[in-house]
Every structure is written in C-alpha cells, then in structure tokens.
Length: 266
Image (cartoon, rainbow, N blue to C red; front, side, top):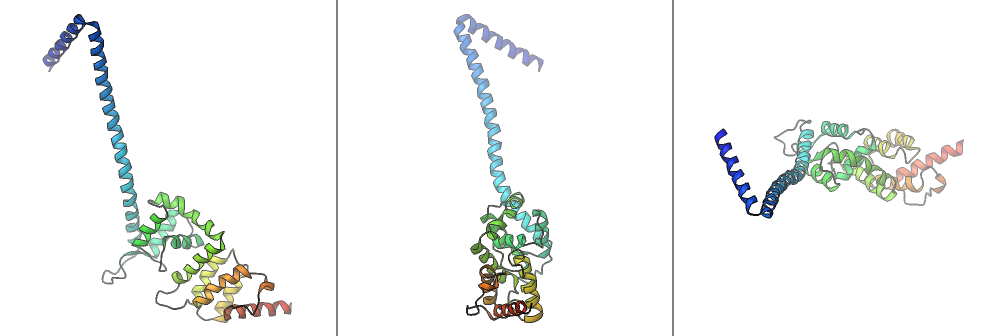
C-alpha cells in the first residue's frame, strides 16, 4: 500500500508541476477546480445531512400515527376481552381509561376526563372504541401522548365558559352515562353524574341529588335531564325566576315547590 501511495503522490506532483509551468493561471484554475471539488464534496455532505433530516420528518409523521396505535393497544390490553364475543374485543375499558388519565396527568374523578371523552366522541360508558380513540384525538390535533398531554387539559374551559357549548356536553353525558340498552338513567347514576359535572354551576347540587335519590327515587328520563340544565342556567339559586307556569318537568316543579315551602317556613 505504501508503494501505491508513493505512485499516486508522484503522479499528483507531476501534474501539478506541468500545470504550473504552462500557465500559472491554470494552476490557479486547478486550485479552483480542486476547491470546487471539495465544495461539491461538502455540498454532497450537506445533502446527506439534509436527507436524513427530511427522512426523520417523514419518520416522525409515521411514528406519530404508530404511537397512537401503540397507545391504543397498550390501553386496550389492560382490560381482559372475550374473543368469542364480537362486541367485547376492540375497545379500551375502565383500566385502560384510568391509565390514560394517569398518563395525561388528570384526575379521573374530575369533570375533565368526561370532557376529553366527549371531545373524542366516546359513545359508551367506560369504553373507548378504536375509531373513537384514533380518529377522535386526531380530529383534535393529537397524534401522540405528548400532544394529548399538552392539548386535552385545555379543552375544559372553552366548554364551561359558554352555556351553549356546556349544554351540548351536558346532553352528551346522558347518552354516555346510562346503560346502552336502557331508555332512561338510574337515579344513582344521574346523581353521580350531576355531582361531577354541575358542582360549580349549581350551589344546591348536593341537595338536588339527595332529593333525586331519597325522595324522587325514579329513573331520570331524557327530557327531565335535558331541561334541568336550562333550569340551572335560567333559574339556578334564584327562585324568584322560577315560574310554575313554564314547561318544566314534574321533577323540577316538585323540587321548586319543596324549596319554596322550606323558605316560607323559615
């Protein structure tokens, strides 16, 4: 190898000498060419550096999609499924939802979890189906757990600060919280949901829920559920705004009658 190196050096030396003898400008041109070659080499190096960067951008996009699929599979695996039941296969269950809440950094016993489920379009209590998880988060700009942790906690305030938006969420809660095959919601489930989502909107929410569970004791129909939020927003704690002639459901009329009687007895 030493001989080959010597031959190459001699050849280079000869070429350089010849060029210099003929024309110094050519020598300069040769240097320029050499520099150009080196620049091309560097340029080629730059391209090589750029290409992986571009490749990484593509990979990042792919990985983002892959991460959501991996997240889904990870959460779905936490709840055992019955392969023989076609309705008990492709979803994230209670344990998976609790783990997701932990990873996001939210309290699963607070309203924010329900709002996240509402935003991604979950349709059945304690379940997130594959399409709901992937498409729902994607629709809201989330392609990774980093995105979810950054964006999901911000979804609550725009809803709670707007009565119209909150009512949409509130109405969704009825369909989501009741048993899928049931036409109404049990008093216990309704009370638990009311306490969770209305504690900062209605001062008498605990009294109302106690009344529902211990006095009313019947399942809550959808029209009663839907109209109660109108009562909260339009009457709330100020019973002077209550008019028995308005089309309130019986449960609300009975509730207000009881409150007014108590007030008169004081």
